[in-house]
Length: 484
Image (cartoon, rainbow, N blue to C red):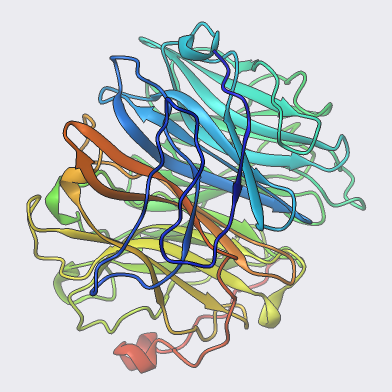
């Protein structure tokens, strides 16, 4: 059955109570003396009871914001073998002051659909057609289809899904061209990979996601997963992704509105430290674009740490579409620290650009990287920049500590999500949606979706790579190279 929408109001307190129906009792998030001191607002909770899933759990959020509207989507009721009971959504139409939530209809059997599980939600907005889109996967055994759910009322009611691609597919992502002057204004693009061989494919819609064109591949082929397409103001689409046949982040592009896709180029090699405790985590990229078309790609990387002992969050930028600057480390902690950082979600104020670009990065971290499944303490952090990443604010702990046993288990380890997301409102605060857990109640988890109450300010700061222990060779942010 489809669950009706519910409204969540922010409270200026550290303990946030949320009114939910009887099948989803109120959850409280509190923190200990050594934990985060940031007020959080709960925006959803898992209401389902189907036996296949681990309840009550919500993982893997994506967000997108336009004007006063912020839409988030996430897995609800994580299934150990893959996917979840359904996909949830939470929408604010007043800039994050209040939230309404619900669950997508017509995908999984718990909501009147044909699929056993759903996974990998991604959110987009099509300005030409004034429609919000959530791309998901529908799972029936080895059949995994890419689906698109549409909202024409501002993100608070959603259609049954449209089948976008069929097969055995994975790691979908969706974006739309919202620049009115672009020759391809109104085009929407969905990326996914074919599970057998991880061959990446792209499809294009010109009518707000109602129909989708044929599957197309880059001219050189692209083997990988986790691609996150972004659209430059000139209409060029860039698709950074994690290459699976090499330790690399690569990218490819279309300059003709998705009619064809060009050969892949190297963004960067990847040096990655496997995090402790069996947590499900990998160096998938998080990508955003600014007003001038500078692309930002963030991932977890250990290149700046002696012996690759733990990860920083690193960022590579491109202003040229085909050439990427060397990655710089986001200066959260000194390179001599014990902190391990991973699963970043980068956000960019799309009304700003270049040296005035306002950036926010949300990430998970272990304060002490040398831990075990029983001792690891999982936290959530946030850091920001007002000058395009040249310097950064003091980081803020948003949530935690959390024990790994408080998270649902999967075939690849305990999980909060393969990715997370941050949306920075134009001229306003950042709104990351994060999965926050407290101790289970018996065999029932307490893992739900939250946002920082009122969002997080994008702050100036003087934290550079040099100030946090990097060597002179890595002390300044590289300048993106422009090529034509």
